[in-house]
Image (cartoon, rainbow, N blue to C red; front, top):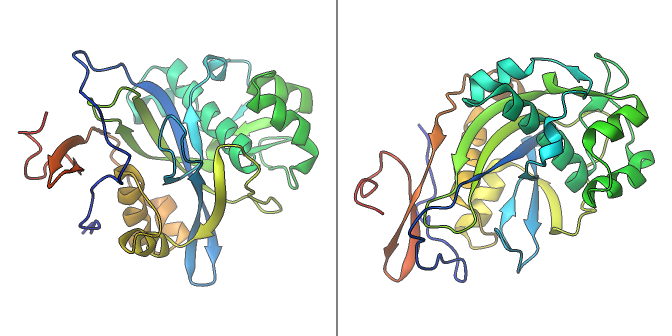
Length: 276
């Protein structure tokens, strides 16, 4: 049974304003839980976002971000389940599904240097430092993922990703995302780094360690990150996590004010139906 930290209040300074009369349309986004085997069990790669960023400033998160319209480029060389397969899992059109997978690959490469692509359908690149210039060009939007892969003769390894969850930002928030969560294993020979302007630090830790840090006030986690870490902690091993059967219904939390703080309430919990 999933056990969540009892305190799900949002940190001071991370408080929604007056709710909009008409909720903003959520933007499609992708985030990736990158896993590796550690000395005490599976570890996940996390980043603490720079304070003052428009969304989730100062929060500890997984790499990810919004979909670029060019992520839907059908010319991207592809290995693994096709766009129709992903569309069925995520409950969207094949075009959106293709864009989500490509966004997951692109954002993880931009923010961590880890690239789920290879010269063919059975291999993955090793050291990615030789693509540093291309990585910077992707960040600045000078090139698209499709052009980068075509120039380097690389194939997206969609088969190395697993669909995990679908979280939508509460309607009270002016900046909203419809985020699909993916699972991926750290490719052999690659290294995850903190070479991104969006993160103050990046590190590997077991899900249990991160949840303990949260309970002790050492880090701030948004509800989707907390829930996902709890789920990963229950898996125990990488094979178990990757073999997990997942139901990807959209999860749309609500925010309620209690004791002068905002708290996230999830579907099915007391107070959810009454919350606005």
